Length: 120
Image (tube, rainbow, N blue to C red; front, side, top):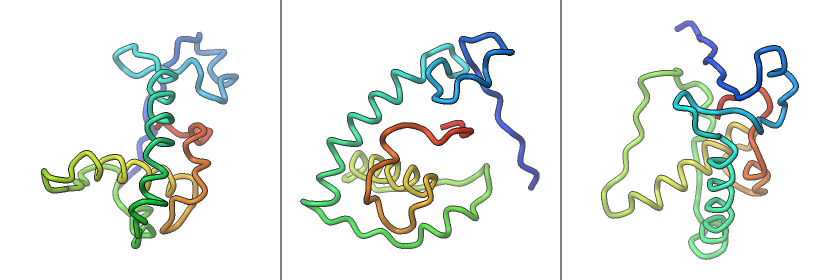
């Protein structure tokens, strides 16, 4: 499958977009600021990080398989009883893998911001 680079949306003019290395002026296709989204995700991530590392001791295995998945048509499922905890854990694991960590969410540097050049 051929990878198609996603379209990048920004509040800045096209010639200034390369200067936005932190993604402060990026927006989603609907015009909402990604800075607010990243701020909320960071707060929720830090609040739930202690739950997954101290209280519940989450055990992660198989993250090396995430790197080889296709870009489209992938579905992750969880049951209805643990849906919210699973979604937050999935998001933390996906971010950790994107930052290069395997089978761990320690240390949580992936909550500080996005990986430069990524679209998440």
